[in-house]
Structures are given as C-alpha cells and as structure tokens.
Amino acid sequence: MIEIIELKKSFNGKVVLDGVDLTIERGRITVIIGRSGEGKSVLLKHIIGLLRPDSGRILFEGKDITKMNEEEFHEILKRFGMLFQGAALFDSMTVGENVGFPLMEHTDLPHEKIGKIVAEKLRRVGLVGVEDMMPAELSGGMKKRVGLARAIVMDPEIVLFDEPTTGLDPIMSDSIADLILETQRALETTYVVITHDIKLTYKIADTIAMLHKGKIIEKGTVEEMKQNTNPVLRQFLEGRAEGPIKVF
Amino acid sequence: MREFFERLGILTEKAIKTMGSMAIMLAQSVYYMFLPPFKFRNIFKQMEFIGVKSLFVVVLTGAFTGMVLAMQSYNALKRFGAESLVGPTVALSMARELGPVLTGLMVTGRAGSAMATELGTMRVTEQIDALYTMAINPVKYLVVPRIVAGVCMLPFLTIVADFVGVVGGYFVGVVLLDINPGVYIGRTVDYVNADDIFVGLLKSAVFGLIISLIACYHGYNTTGGAEGVGKSATNSVVTGCVLILVFDYILTSIMF
Ligand SMILES: Nc1ncnc2c1ncn2[C@@H]1O[C@H](COP(=O)(O)OP(=O)(O)OP(=O)(O)O)[C@@H](O)[C@H]1O
Ligand SMILES: [Mg+2]
Image 1 (cartoon, chains in turn blue, orange):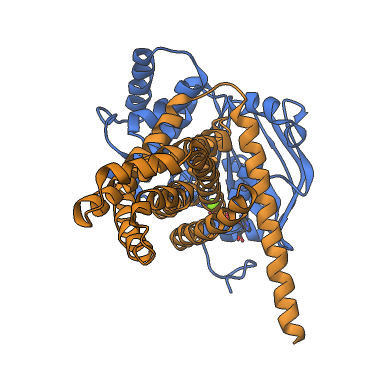
Image 2 (cartoon, each protein chain N blue to C red):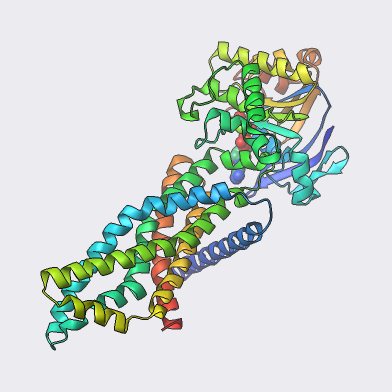
C-alpha cells in the first residue's frame, strides 16, 4: 500500500535517513523498531508529508506523495490518522471537541450525529463520559487513548503511531497494545507503529522492520525476527548494552 | 575588526531571512484568507480575544494619557495665554498619535505575547503537526483569523482610546483646571477634522497587522521546548513594539 524507496534525509549535514527501503502492506500492522534518535519519528513524518525528503520516493497506491500539490495531498491525508508521541491534543478544546474535530472540519454531519460518533469512538478506547473534560485534566495514558480515538474517528485506512506506549506503566502499555489490536482487527486497517518497546512489538506486529543507521537492516514476521541472527538485531531485541551497537 | 564585520554580516543575513519568511507567511495568509471555506467562528473568537479582552487596559491607558496630556498642554499653552487650545491639543494628539501607538503597544504586550505563547506551545507539543495531518492547513486555521482580527480590532480599540482620552482631557481641563466647557468643546470641534481621526485609524490597522503577524510568526516557528516558547513570546513583544514605532514614523511621514 505504501512503498518507501531510497529515502534520504539529513538535517544540517547530519544524515538521519540514508536510503530507507520499506513496503507497508495493506491491512496489517507493521512495526518499525530502532534506537532512540535513529530517525523513527523522522521516517513517520515523511510518510505523512510533515517532512520533505532530500531524495527518494514515497508511493501511496503507486503515486508519489512527495510530488503532490496541496489539494491532492489533502485528499490522501483524509484517509490517514496519526497518533503523536505526546498525543498532541488541542488543549484549547474539550476531549469531545478534540475527537470530533476532524468530523467538524471535513463533514457536514449534524452536531448530534458527531456527538454520537465521538462517544462511540471514546467507548471503543475504554473511555466513557469524558467528553467535557479538558486535555490538561487527563493522565498520560488517557491522553493516548483520546489521541487514538481522534486518530480513528474518520475511519481512516491507515493509522500511524509514534511510540504509543512510551511513558506509560506496563499495565497501561499492555492495554494500549490490546486497543491497537482490537481497533485494527475491527476494520482491517493498515497500522504503522514505531516503537522501541519490544513487548509491544511482539504482541501486535505482523511485520517487524528494524531501522539502524538510517537504513532498514532487517524485516520479517515476529517468528522470522526471533530466528534472525543479525547481531545488531539480536542486541536490540534482547536489550543488551554490549554488542555491535556502541552506546558511547 | 574582521570578526565584527563577520558578526554584522551574519546578523544582517538572519534579519533579511526573517523578513523574507514573514513576507511569505503574510502572502500565504492573504491567499488563504480569500480561499473558501471560511470559518467565521475562529475569527470571532480571535476578535473577542484581541478586542474585547484588551478593552479594559486600553480604556485605562487612554484615560490617563488624555488626562496627563491636558495637564501638560495646559502648562505649556498658559505661557502664551492659549489655554483655550487644550481641548484640540489633547484631541489631536490622541487621534493622530497616542491613541493608535499606545493601543498598539498595549495590545502587543497583552495579546501579542499571548498569541505567540499559544502558537508556540501548539508547535512544540505537535498540535500544529496534528492539524496538518488532519488535512487542515495550519496557516489558514491559525494565522488567518488572528491577522483578520488584529486588523479589524485595533481601529476599534483605538477609537475607544481616543474617546476615553478626550473625555479624560475634558475632565482635567474643565473640572480641575477651570477651562470654560463651551470653549473647550467648541475649539475641539473647530480644529479637529475627520481626517485626523482617519489617519490614526489607518495607522492602527497597520499596527494590528504587525502585532498579529509578528506574534504568529514567532509562535509558529518556535523550536526548543518550553524555553523556546518563552523566547518566542519575548521576541514577539520586542519586535512588535519596535516595528510599531518604526512604522509609526514611516506612516506619519507619508500621511503628514
Ligand atoms: N526538525 C529537525 N531538525 C533538525 N534535526 C532533527 C529534526 N527532527 C529530527 N532531527 C534529528 O533527527 C534525529 C532522529 O530524530 P527522531 O525524532 O526521528 O528520533 P526517534 O528515532 O524518533 O527517537 P525517539 O525514539 O527518541 O523518539 C535526531 O538526531 C534529531 O536530532
Ligand atoms: Mg520519536
């Protein structure tokens, strides 16, 4: 569904993505793992057009999104949802307004109908009766849930997740993992998740890809990756300080 | 010496780049301003924020400025027996100069810094990116309403400041300094034209544009977390105030 070809990006001479090649398949959960600062967020921001590559292409249904004009790309963006690392809820709006915002902006649905959809989506992420709260009153885990509800409110075909479990306790992390699985199964959506949470990865991934030094070094199913003997991958998956990746 | 010129060169380059990016933001805003769909709700919200919520501080500033103007001009004009001209002096100074400038400076401090902070926070917490990913153009959604509100509300606030200033001047001149009320009002009406007020309002509209554009620019381009947000707010107030005074001079010399 999405093909990333030879994607390169540097910031002020510092190479972050050095020729990323990756295919994301429709209806599956692709998890991209990699160390902090390896450029996972940068890669995700390229997929959704927040950053422009120095070179390389990103094909969505065969069309290069890096070459589209704003109007064309907006039509594609409406089929995307994104959950940001910090949830990125609008703090001037209530939870209900946050979740309903894309509907308010892009559809002509009456308010009651939007209210119903919002309540439905919030219920799906395990929140009831929180519509009138402000984001500042929510805990980190609740924010992520609301962010997820907002990301799926338009029933997008693709949802991108930037570290959905970072900063959450293990139980909350696991419940977010369940939510990701449930919401994905329900609609057969394409999910792209970036994380360095190995537990989450094993639990939800259909495909795992590892980003290292600006390239995708390995890709495969959970079983394949567990069997893989690439020392870099092994070190990361086993979370060891000693190995080919040097910390200092 | 060489280092000095290098430093100067870098600073100049930065200043020119900043002006260029501001001009681009302004051009984009004008483009999206006339591109449907129009979201009047956002514009009204910003008008309330810039206009209504600045009313109190503008009234206070206007009143005290008018009062002090009356006192000072009385002191000066008495020296050649022209006390009767206190009225027009206060009114002209307010309408042509102090009304628009002081209103502009006060709104920069109150609304400009708040706008920069709000947009800066939205930037560093990725709310602006979130807007973008929802297929909403952030310039159209965030910057345009603020610019429209700034350009519309500054003249309104200036009228209020002018009026309150004249009333304050009347109070000091007539009640405290015993100028004949008929003379005070009569002279004011004689000497002040609609043009004088219009010139002031035109200036204030430009100030409104400056305040909103500068605040949005700094807020929108914030980097570096909470510290960056603070910097953006400070920068927008400093640049805003300086530019208001510079443009005040330029506009005054054009419309003299
Ligand atoms: N807008 C930017 N300007 C300059 N450098 C940037 C920018 N965005 C990212 N970088 C740099 O790119 C590198 C990768 O950042 P990125 O945020 O993608 O890391 P990450 O893999 O998501 O890490 P984490 O797991 O900590 O979120 C970092 O070294 C960062 O400094
Ligand atoms: Mg990241």
